Image (cartoon, rainbow, N blue to C red; front, side, top):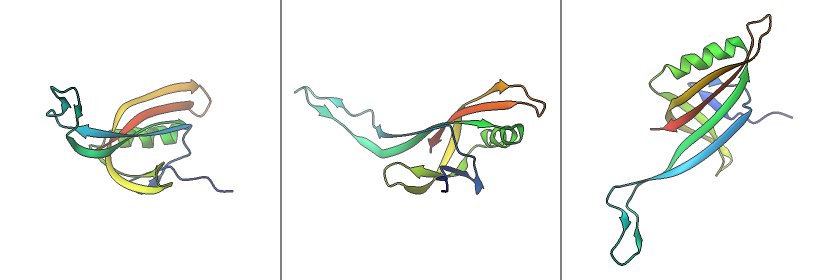
Length: 120
């Protein structure tokens, strides 16, 4: 049985993540809010902006690859959409990159890497 491919960065198939959380947020204009009558008015500028929190347990080779993607201004990301259960494409950037040494080995360690992808 094959695993689902959750993330693809610029054509590079990433390893299976330990955690994968997709959040979709609506971007609202400052003009929205509560009216004098007490009703809520939403001026939505953009619907469903995707944010993906992800973590991996990786080898030093993958640590280097993921750190390289973190340095880029934007990445073409193929991601597994939890609404349609299909792959979708979006331009994203990496935010909150964190690499933690889990275990020191003779092969330069096992690393836990976590970050959030945000859609432009």
